[in-house]
Amino acid sequence: MFKNTINNITAVIKRKLSLKFSYTQTIAFGFLTVILLGASLLVLPAASVSSEWTPPLNAIFTATSALTITGLAVYDTYTHWSLFGQVVILILMQIGGIGFMTLITMFSIFRKRKIGLHERQLLVQSTGVLKLSGVIRLIKKIVVGSLLVEFAGVILLALRFCPRMGFRSGLYNAVFHSVAAFCSAGFDIMGREGRQFVSLADYRGDLLVNITVMLLIIIGGIGFIVWDDVIRHRLRFGEYELHSKIVIVTTAILILSGWGLFYIFEANNALSGLTSGDKIIAALFLSVTPRTGGFSTVNVSTLSESGLFLTIIFMFIGGSSGSTAGGIKTTTLAVLLLSAFATARKMRHVTAFKRRIEDRIVKEAGAFVSVYLTVVIIAVLILCVLEPFALKQILFEAVSAISTVGLSMGITPLLGDAAKIILMSLMFIGRIGWLTLVFALAGEHYDPPIERLPEKILIG
View 1 (tube, rainbow, N blue to C red):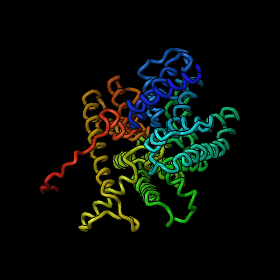
View 2 (spheres, helix red, strand yellow):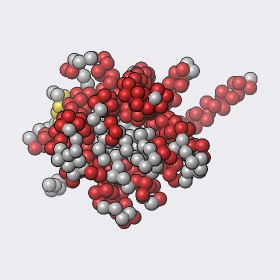
View 3 (cartoon, rainbow, N blue to C red):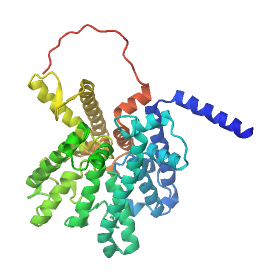
């Protein structure tokens, strides 16, 4: 009798919550809850090397950066945070990369509890999959695939780290950096006293470390839908979904073009002291990491003006939808370029690979980039008023934050409290998406059943 009563009360609470919170609101508030929980742990004396309390705002900033898998840091991760603090950051990165709704679902599956329609809708919203059917099967693939890829990264990185650092420390470093790279987080524990925020600079010419980290970033950044396509259809590109085709082609073009451009821009600048082979590796790494890995083998503040601008462009683009990456996404860029091409040729519809892209998708792509740019412009204007740094430094930091990249020109630890709050807001918006945030704050809006009279205006 008592058990039935408890079950009935639980069911009523669940119904009330499902009525009170929309899917987008649940995702947004879920992220905030995990951030605050992580910050409450990082603020503790046990989380810092000095065994002192960490200022709450800096703890919240670090937790936000870790959960949104950004990598911007007010402290060097190794020299400030203790092993406990680093593990908290590691867990937050893993939750942010795979998705907290995905993890909750896996726990439900392990408990053999039925996954309801409401939870399935949340999963579709949080993982960015295209349809409701088969979402649980895809979630299992995401979790298992993520762990397998990270494990492979650990093995490869350990081959280099263990001989240099010792087995224990090398294995721990391999785990931390494999998770950070796959989740596009950008946190590193390579710093030492007197040499902080060095990232992977000591491995600039190491082919194994560079290729492993780049592959982890690329695999994590192409998106879970593409994974599923590749697993099901292998190398039969013609059988892939349109989304996967656009992602793969756009990603390849960006990496290869960026590789060549960075080599041209930086061969006699930031890379001038390196051998020819190291220049080639470093240029490729510069092309991959802004979208949105966050690691660096070259100090970005030493890049030429053209190299910095290209890095900002790549950070702005980011990875692919439904992945661990941020930015406007490769598919958004592709849709806008295809739309411009179709408009120039006076075509009725936007097409790619002999398929028509829905008009709604084209509108959403334009709206997404417009809002994204507006948010960046407003944030940069406010930061320019608050901080004494150069425009290029502030722009770089703001784009890095909203695109959840984590690359920095070194000014993040020097920012005031108000500027840190702005960057935290940008990281949060960049991770959950502006549509999710708008719907979470205002609720979803539906057009009234009225057909408005059309009228022409001049543009361009």
